[in-house]
Amino acid sequence: MQAEERQFLIEQHLQKVEFASLEELSEKVDVSISTVRRDLTLLEAKGTIRRTHGGARLVTPKSDEFTFTARDTHQLNEKEAIGKAAAALIQPNQGVIIDSGTTAYHAAKHLGGKASHIITNSLPVANHFGSDNSVEVLVTGGVIYPRLGVLVGPLAVESLSKMHADVAIMSGGGITLDGVTNSHALLIDIQRAVLQSAQRIIFCLDHTKFNRRSVSPLCGLDAIDTIVTDAQAPTDLVAELKQAGTQVVIA
Amino acid sequence: MQAEERQFLIEQHLQKVEFASLEELSEKVDVSISTVRRDLTLLEAKGTIRRTHGGARLVTPKSDEFTFTARDTHQLNEKEAIGKAAAALIQPNQGVIIDSGTTAYHAAKHLGGKASHIITNSLPVANHFGSDNSVEVLVTGGVIYPRLGVLVGPLAVESLSKMHADVAIMSGGGITLDGVTNSHALLIDIQRAVLQSAQRIIFCLDHTKFNRRSVSPLCGLDAIDTIVTDAQAPTDLVAELKQAGTQVVIA
DNA sequence: AAAAAACTTGCAAATAATTTCATATTCTTC
DNA sequence: GAAGAATATGAAATTATTTGCAAGTTTTTT
Image (cartoon, rainbow over all chains, first blue to last red; front, side, top):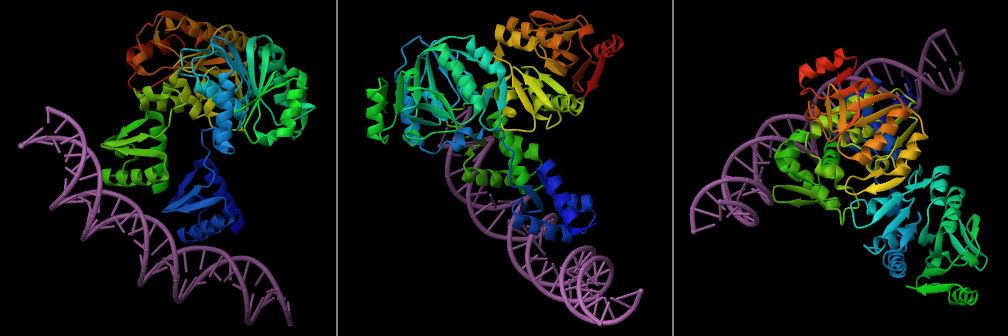
């Protein structure tokens, strides 16, 4: 057997078991422990693997968590503030749709027992209300979009179109005077359905989204009732948005 | 076993049970209490865990997770084993429906990349596969049943009736020769739909469910293909079930 | 306040890593 | 295709780490 082949086998085996002892590996590829050590040192340098006492482990631990919230440390304070401000706009006993963006998630956290029912296609949001029996939480069906924990696809769109809510709290990838844009086509389908199903549309957009255009256009300014953003949002665009008839809330 | 693997197991176990004693952990990973102490000190430094007198607890700020699994330390090992055995019955690339019981959840954990797609109305199951892009996970819509993380109601029933899978892994509240019973009427509606939508029905039932009748009848034995249980299941009922034509697997 | 349980520290035995060296294998060059 | 160089492998000796135990201290419980 070739050295490279052996190393590949080791790597592959580790992908399966996450942890392996030197003895285990040396049996698997039928060489001495010394050689396995050397192979592991090489693989570690390559980066796919980490050596440990007595063996090796995979460097990418497949965690059960959504990277969602972890990834979200960017502009965390701003998003937190925006979420709080957005939640403050909700009247008691309203029905609220919360979409799948990270900022919308923060709004959900501050919603407390305010809303009477919540509709969402975001698993993190669903989880958040999972053990709260003061609100009725309706989860749309759909296929899980990996790593984001969003439910997408026809089932999600369909079930959202059938529902109705007083307010929708949404987020997007960018905003200009032309309207809001977002990145994933799958998300756009769903957000369009949300726009149809809610009476009042609130967009949570931190300042980095201003004057940015993401891949696909979602809707024009006329579809939006309120934009919630943070203090660092460019004042000129904020002014223009207000002039265009959109309510802008600075958190 | 390697130190890192051991620490990972401890962490994982704590994820499940929220709190564990040193003795419990030392038995779980089969090392001395001293070593567990040292491991816990390391894990605490890492931040995932907090040491307490007599053990350790998870440091989850305000657990967005379901108390679901945590509360359910009862028969944990059995359920774990049953789940593993049930997962072993699945052929590669099958479509699998997993329902909302705790035992079915454990089956999900052992399913790995075996199934090609998974259909579920259980949020814990959905979360488990949330960042796994080797499987397509279809979540039924529905209203969250608090504290259990199950999606129930017409939307859940409706969307399940429209789907189809090769196998269904289910759990229930009790089993007798008359069939399976379960506690919540809402769950029964959904499980009926699952029974219709899957070709092969596997029930995961630990020994405490044997010879018990829960509130509402769910289905007769004829609807069930396989029952997976643990070694403590009463042998007489097991024999009778087998005679009635049901396959029984002892984990 | 006493007793029990749990924590810390230090130490010896066990286990694993590194280094070194002899042998085997592969690759080059003629 | 054979001789020699270069590399890879396995084994032994040395060094380092980890583990389990016991003695003494602190914390919790009664």
